[in-house]
Image (cartoon, rainbow, N blue to C red; front, side, top):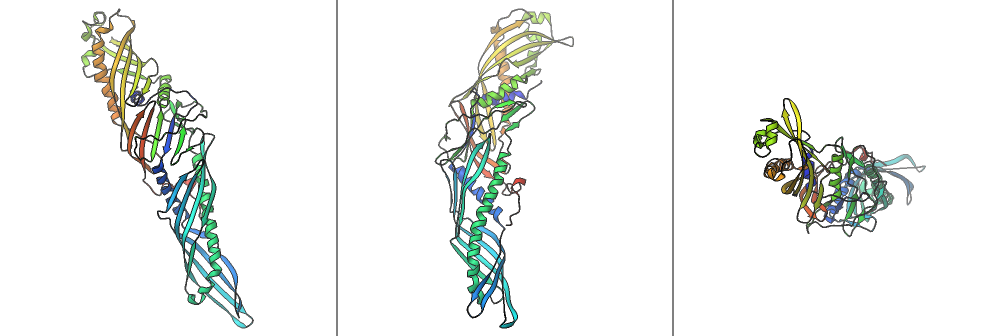
Length: 493
């Protein structure tokens, strides 16, 4: 056998539909309300990790004290080392942007304090030093982000970002701290302003790194040396009341073909059978149809069959009374079935099933005196149907034979009626082709996801001309985003 790796692709085509015009989005990913909440949790968690520890600028100023005059006080090594966002946060899709608000945020900071005083009244310098703990409560942080299409990639920008500190409590330690507690007003305004300035700046800086990461994502993914998947984004994301849809070209092309941007937009659809899922991935018929066309044009849809369950059928002796001239010309010779696609399969999908019509040419080869001799070619048109299911992070499929028809294209062993071999061909299709395809699809196709994330509780829905995967998402590795080189940078002001 040869080139059998293309048969699973054919079955995959049975499990998804075909045929749409170029210049449109053929795949879409909808992040639903549950998915937005999950994304919010991940982003807030990563923001907390990126913001802590955060060094704030120190301050030194003169404070006037009655009878003594000016005393120099300083706060140094001001460090935000803990943030607690809690559960009081929300994400809201707007008309053209995302708004994330975290309320009731608390933070813990530490710092070193010192003061000194000298005067002509006192011959020696008076000074003291110590540490302080700072508790920030009732802080609110908000960010408005916009995601747009930039030359087929995603661009992320911050429209607004702000931070407001409600309560701030400074507790001095060391030295005669109880005596200097009244000096804390010299630090409070500075620390409040530093926190309200530093947090938005660091969030905006982190967003710019994420924007660079998004724009660096490949617009084409080579699956092998024959085909590539066009991952170009189409137009700007669509914002719903509680969801965002990202539309992708999604078509397959030759691995060496150049990509062209598409700018048409499908309708936003959130149908997932009424279930509450984080992610909805919708695939157009044209996605799989384009894959089949690429492999067909590359000449890869070819299968040579030399072994079947009833091996005697691949010997001319079994055809002695069905095609007598075959046996008379080549008595007791072994045979091969050389099968190739005559044209790309045509796919259909409905709410009930996924179907396909396959056009193939089957050449009968006889192995005679160490020579392979083609003796006849039969045109085979097969109608089949399939279903798709999911378990874990894999999608599985199953296909079964519908109807088929036969026509003799040419023959070197005389004309023979197709009705004579129809029963044998049906057995061949049911016992060789269908079981092989189902065994390959039984291994499942792993769904690609971003490193650190896993899909769970996936199920598959079919609707007219679409196949939709509905899934929840789990963040498997909390440190994976932070380890990306583009997201690593010092966090010291």
